[in-house]
Image (cartoon, rainbow, N blue to C red; front, side, top):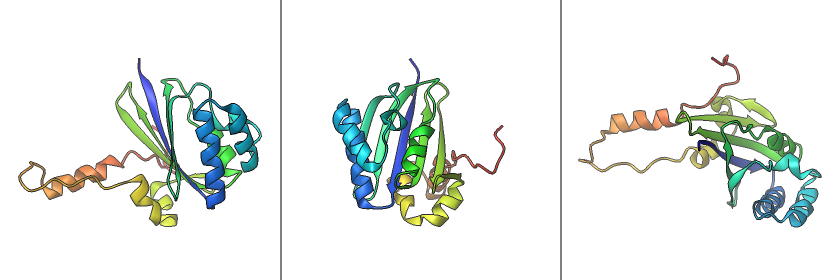
Length: 172
């Protein structure tokens, strides 16, 4: 069965909002709706379905000091988590990067959001250069003799993140 794998990098305006969102999502992933509802309400979100789609599966929630990483899968007809992003932007989310791997066609798309708006990759990193190493980590470099030249390797790394959709360009 094909599925879409979603990765959401969520950057909040402060550590308290980050912690409340972390707890809400961790309890949702653990199917503890009572605790999830409590932490979501503290964040300001009253409707859990605004944060979490019951169709999501294989959920993982990872918190770092600076951001929250939410990973989940959907069926091939699953929607993008735009409702969750909208709810979070209304309650302390500052910026986000969404990456979706479409298993059926073997393609990846990325979308960047800032202050509730879909922005280009360039605009996102102009506003938040500190997040580049988080959402576009450098791959380990091969050592001499492993078959990948430095120039070719640089091209591969550049191509890896060239899947970002630009809201200013028409969709083909």
